[in-house]
Image 1 (tube, rainbow, N blue to C red):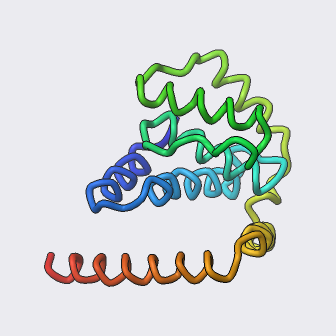
Image 2 (image 1 turned 90 degrees about the vertical axis):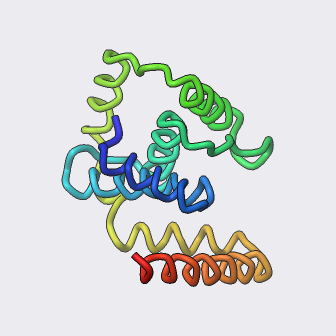
Length: 154
């Protein structure tokens, strides 16, 4: 279950017109925080990110599942299921939740280290073309400009 402050931040991002991926980023941050605090672990940084995205989808963030062929079929189906559950606002089974937590407690905590996150970011960026990276940077800069203006007026 995501924390109330995470849901609040995601809703604020949505109200500001930010992309669903930005809203989902709040849930990923929360997951990394949980691992660092020792609440549970993750086998890899990729798994930690996937858990955060799944939580976001279940919380109702309109983050569509990945396209066919980009990830394994199992992952895509799982994302699809989480997305549908989030849109329908169905509660999560307590038994399932407990089992998930129990399994994650056995995993290492290194997935959320600065080095692991840096490695993950670099390998993800390498898969993108220079044009894609440039477009993302321009988009981020534009968002920053509008965000800083709105925060100054408040």
